[in-house]
Length: 134
Image (cartoon, rainbow, N blue to C red):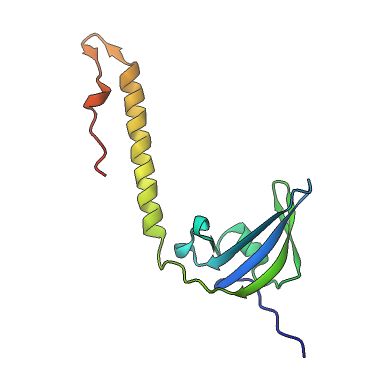
């Protein structure tokens, strides 16, 4: 009796090979998780990404068409039940990082403007700009 092959999808750990037209194939491994827990740097790929959508429902050994830049397909090497429990909700953490990046960009823009502006009432002093609250 043959073993039942697990299907790629949310809650699964998947090992794949991205197949490139140029022959620069790349192996990857990740857990597919709900969007709110996604953090690729930690190995958690959102189930809403094009890659996760392409492989969901497929089993190890299958090659799935996947058109992205130089890629033409994904070969699913292994599918197992995820052993990791992703953080419950990384959306708040992502939003905080995004807000911080926007503040830093706005400050950089203000400093660049202040450094380059000279008016008849005097120059702007970049050091007089408010400091970041963090």
